[in-house]
Length: 359
Image (tube, rainbow, N blue to C red; front, side, top):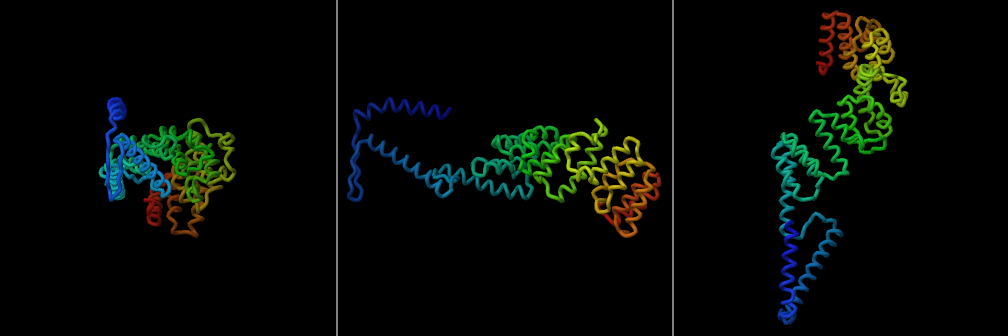
């Protein structure tokens, strides 16, 4: 609106002053160091316009050649940029010190300059979130470019932090595919699917996880135990887990035969009253090196009194590893399943003694 008003004023001035300058061009004489310059007022105005245009083009060339696009030759704009840069530097320090309200205020001021636009809005959004200002955090997210993965990541992550994983999945559903190379965005989608309990979709995504290497080997080794046991257990409870289903058969054989998958199958069998078969599944696949990752899920399986073979296996391990807290943790769980609360308590105390992280 202001630009439109200025344009109208300029047109009116041109209509009023134009004829007067043409009929009365005026005369200007400038003497500098022995040089004499004579011209009309209209000629001087045209010369000033051409000089301004030349300076503007020169400024563009300098920015392009020396890669200083964020530097302004306009004093007022330069002053505004300088203030924004100072605010950004102070905002980063406040962010690192977890001074969230101060960081949010400074990073908000820093966005007055378009230099590092994405980074300023990204950090500003998290600062506002931790400061308890969710609407302002969402405004920072909206200010990012629509086709930027950073914007999608930020929107989904903010939803996850508000315990709304289903909405986070909805944000990412159309953007994380088998060809996605953005590991950060893909990993966030995996975590969102887990929290939302969308297990079948997550299992369908596993081939892409492995193909694109969204997680390194160590990460995936741990992630298996957070996916397969819960996925198989939940699917068996809701719609019935089918080992012949397309989403399961599409997995590599190594994944379908993994210890994590075996724990999920044993959990599902035990829930359906097949405790003996569940124990056989565990005995056939469980190994000592994977026990630390497997134990939290094994302890949720209702085996009842069908624990004899698993107890023998644990005792066999204990002969050569008598200070392994996870073995004592397994024995405590087995004793509890058989109703031997005293033995379970003693074994659990030893488990904590040798492995304090279990406490």
